[in-house]
Image 1 (cartoon, chains in turn cyan, brown):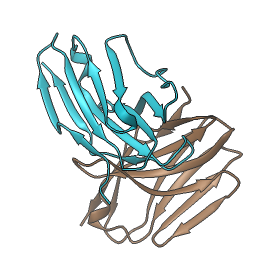
Image 2: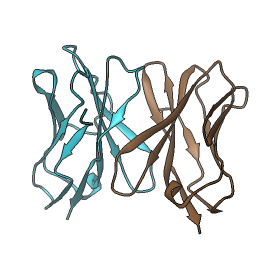
Image 3: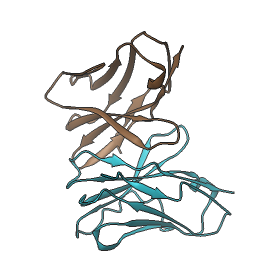
Image 4: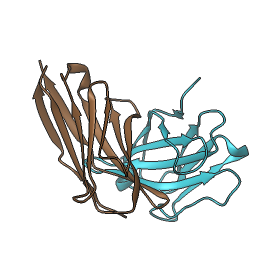
Length: 114
Length: 109
């Protein structure tokens, strides 16, 4: 079946603007994750959704970052008032059930803030 | 978060073996993973090992785990140009995944 998809693949924005990044997980996967990959750094965990439970937002770097997951499927990561340090590749992953299950990653969205 | 460390770069000649190393800090890790990221693509799971194992082999890939030293390695036999990519190790500790910085493998023809 189809893998995890993300859109857009590339996003260039001006400092101070808001951006929305979209993730479509694998059908039937109840767990969804957002990560950020900055140049020369490892993956940084942002947020985790599991079914109808309250999301684990412990990785969000500031209150400018938020995420939603509607209907237990598609997720949107929103960054408000973008800053240059927000430039990174944002990766989404999904897994069948819990955090212990293997994660399958999307191709990522490359965000560049000018 | 936990520290997962990898060297940033590795170059090998085509046909040689590649060994990519990773160290981690959390002794309560349950699973350890190796992912491959090709240019412009997302992470692809290569293999994983349960923490009570010390070796796992899968075709050209061999994973070695030294739990005492918290050291994980990935050996790729007969490395091919198509193996050029960034390789990430990751650990599942408690309820959280922690990823290394990635090792960029360049295969020289």
